[in-house]
Image (cartoon, rainbow, N blue to C red; front, side):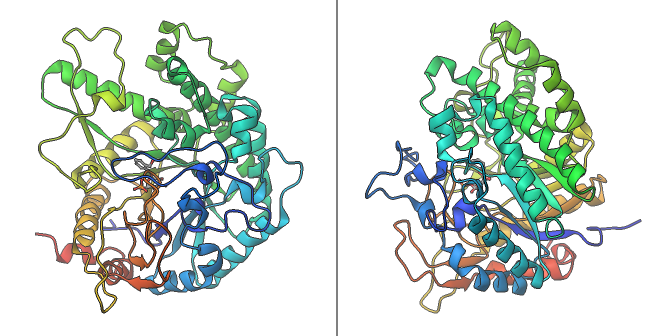
Length: 483
Ligand code: P53
């Protein structure tokens, strides 16, 4: 019997291309949907512009300039001791418009260079194919993922990179946080996930489901294609797992919380089990939506289930029944989320819940019967840089210590099969939800502010040495500080 994390456990760090690379228009790169998202903050949601507007503050145009600094940053990763580095391939570096005939060689070369640099430091790349950065032209020309033709464009992109990086990459994921569009009343989520622009209010929910369906078919095709190209390829889903708790033990609250879980996680059902859940098929019927879901699609979904479940975990939610009778239950995230009195929140209002991570790991394992890979977890916080260039981020260490302790319990006591752990933003980067730099996640501080001002210098935070030790001891160091 092994206790603790298994040998070869994949300790790592995670980022996404558009949040770090910058160089948004360099070497033939096309405009991505992230490139038309202005900066916002905790109170003001990011606005999307029609094309790139002169003088706008577009933080993803800058990122942390990783496109130019990656050699230095990879050396820091080596020092941290990570075994895997999760990033994405910016689709627009390879196919600037998404529907181009030929891939852009300069873009392909950049990732060859980056992957070679990583491998030279003993770090294996883990790659997300689509991480909130699809080609903007696919939105304007086709209406984003609401158009079936996007399936072929995506499969073509995947085929190019699967062939090109064979031997350099083993673990892939198809769509980042594919289920974040549960929050379909938010234009940002419709845009980030599916490139959907200006959808009429009354049609948002249906459009979200239709776009999701095409993404799921594309995902299943790509899983099969990966296995044909290289039987060693492991392709995962990527679900933003946010469990829902009932406010009370009142049966109506329990039932409604169950619907909330179903509504947020059905993408995982399709990707892991190959089938639509019955409540959702019924939901389509009750709404009289003529969904474009063919028998051939259903066969594709069955044949293209994922090898592992990749997921992010930041927070849990609570909810309560909106009525006593609960007939045709309709969950709407923006409306139905309530505070959990037992939890505290980050400065951005995200409820901190380490136990919820163990709960989630059990829930997913019971339901999906796949190995799990925690590909994001972390704490966005304001950091203070001292005059000596130090950052005393004990709050971040506390967050990781408490979450990883629960992960260890899930592995050790509950027998969950976990492949690896890649904390989000091992280096500070541009926030996806707000576009801020000051919502910092890293073990490494990047001296840049929300307007892109600063030296760009990298400084190790206190959490750097802490995580370094966790990796070096394969998680055994987590035990010493436990009460
Ligand atoms: P930021 C919302 C809720 C949960 C995860 O988020 C989310 C989001 C963002 O829409 O995104 C994931 O930067 C995502 C990353 C992102 C990270 O979590 O808003 O996969 O791209 O940066 C953290 O604090």
